[in-house]
Length: 287
Image (cartoon, rainbow, N blue to C red):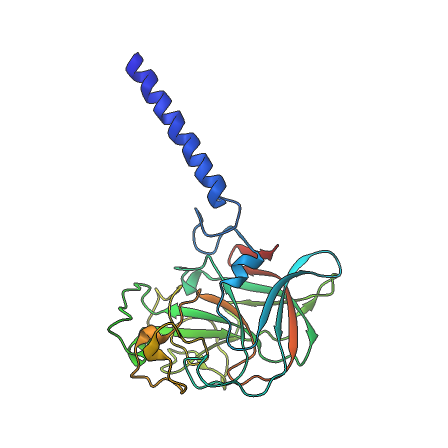
């Protein structure tokens, strides 16, 4: 009897401790991927989270309140002259804003289903607003960055691109851009293309890599030439585009799903507001 009461007391103590951990870690609140399967649940992004995301040259990402009182993300690139080479893995000298989306690490391409993006252009031209997905062909993620070159890593990790086209106007003044995995709207960076259209020339195809049914979105290093360089490693700071023989560790780690504004050579002032995203069943909002 006494032994059973002690067990019950220990069980209740453990349960309460777990509850406190949930409160501290935002268990189930959508702050992060805690307790969720890839691509499910809600994610709320705030300014402290934005501050941890690496940008390429002159960019401002900030959570703001729009005219209707809704918290949204402002992605702003200023008009500048050419920047020094070195922010990108490649030799780019432009400004690129990068929003990283947590919670999709391990999501198979075959399970993506659909993507929605609610956004509106505030200033500048429409182009160079798009999404990237870092994909691992076998979803094993066993690459050793310290022993691999950029060329080695690019064999198994590829960037897939979606460029929003015509969207549907929403009552709140935003436009909803949407795509499904079966729409001919997807491109892949580099070669081979595994049956997909090559970025940027196309033609765009459905989402899927022929011969790789387990291909999945991952968080990690892509060493894509148009994404940030890891300048914390002295050997990666060269003032020139990195050769493909450089260490794979020269790529900056990032989330597997990205919203981008600008490209490696963008110098134009432009601003977009992003209100909401949805990938599979996960909704992304700002606060």
